[in-house]
Amino acid sequence: MPVLAFLFLYSFGTNHFALRTFYPLRVDSTQVEGKWQRDTVFHRIGNFRLVNQSGQPTTQRNLEGSVYVASFFFTTCPQVCPRLNSQLQRVQEKFRKEPRVKLASFSVDPQHDSVAVLANYAEQYGAIAGKWYFLTGAKDNINRLALQDYKIAEAGPAPISSSPGLVHSQRLVLVDRDKHIRGVYDGLDPKDVDRLMTEIRILLYTYDHD
Figure 1 (spheres, one colour):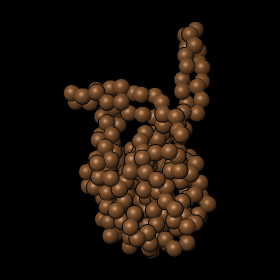
Figure 2 (cartoon, helix red, strand yellow):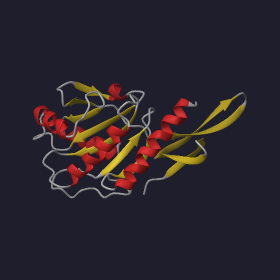
Figure 3 (cartoon, one colour):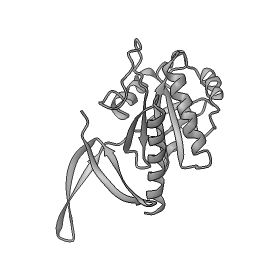
């Protein structure tokens, strides 16, 4: 069970919201002007180097400074993935004109999901180049990202898939510009995806009012 911490309170319009930062690692103590202060250090998404649907290398630098939604899928998935990506279409459309919002969809079946296959698949969902990345690479690297970085097997609102040999989930993971996980959502539940979009707006609001 992940530990959820750091309830960051702020105003958004006329309401008050609390957005979590997930997975605290440790508490560091630092001395500032002669006084000791405690600071929680949170898990960060690690670096990666993969290839996108245009055949271009893609790393965390392509997402730098952005709020983005991560997901794990495969193109031959018959039921869950089409529904998941249809919801991600909604997210892309909602933030079509907001360059700070991106999507990163990682294929868990790189043996089949070549660049050409991903290009055709991305076209089916109207993916905007440079905004919605469909990514492929070595299977071990994808599995590491899924389990260790994005933690899709941790307790959350949506189950990990039992697809044979594939680390796959209907979860969506919201990552902030500092590479912290700020939300986990059931990508098949339109209401939970609505919550995701609201929380993206909240993050953008906080950045605009820092």
